Length: 349
Image 1 (cartoon, rainbow, N blue to C red):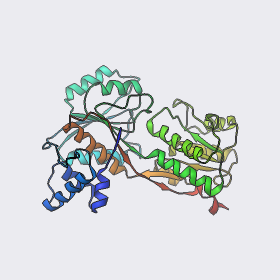
Image 2: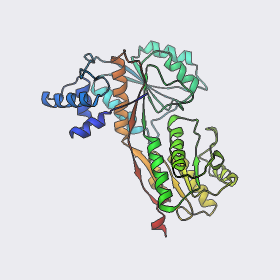
Image 3: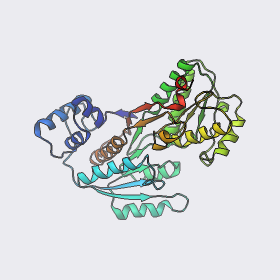
Image 4: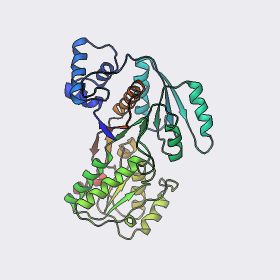
């Protein structure tokens, strides 16, 4: 699996907007001088459809029918709203048709879904929050171009097929903050909270923590973590508190799979009279609004969600138009640490 240069990378190097770069790369009108500048930079960086020959082999773009597929309703979840909106804007600006479909594996059959896709005559699929292993395999076997935003854990599905993956750089982010907090505060007892079999991003966040602890020679086993299956109610404070009692060591820092879980951990610690950040630190992920509004406010990692949506739509349309692709590509969206009260022990003293 290859890591691809992104639209944002080209835009930042040229000092242009992502939309301008995306239009030029997809055959839409931009001033000739600007277009040449963008295409030359794309060739230089070997961006997606620009091969080693420096020739753009993408044919003139025509209107496509795109299916935005999700495993649960997303329009009321703050993290996904800007992603979906940017996908909509990208598709509508280039006059592609976009359809949304929510598939519930518990009440729907894949056969009925496949018939819907066939009736829709979809050219490709953008899949969000779609992590069920069996469903993904069946989806890939439809032979349609697909772009997944996040993916199932890498040890459960072969990483090859007519699909790409767009995700955040989770391993690097968690690796960095784990080492930083160890060096800054001397913390050695870390605890990861979340189901690492749920999705690739959760798994990578766990790997990031483990890699950091290994580099710093800090002993750690899964008995030091809360790794219950996704069926466990991570949003229930009492349930989290019960799991805290079971830990063999008292954690000095919790690395949580996302901000939703981090909030529950903070609330459970408060009920146990363990002060954050005085006695324990908490780190979340995704930088949702609730992370900043919670008390204590939660240190998290955020990405440019608009860019994530643009990269997903661009990756899919490139794959639709480049049917000769024989490998799965991975587009990594960079994150930025947003430090808040839950790791600011110095200000708390």
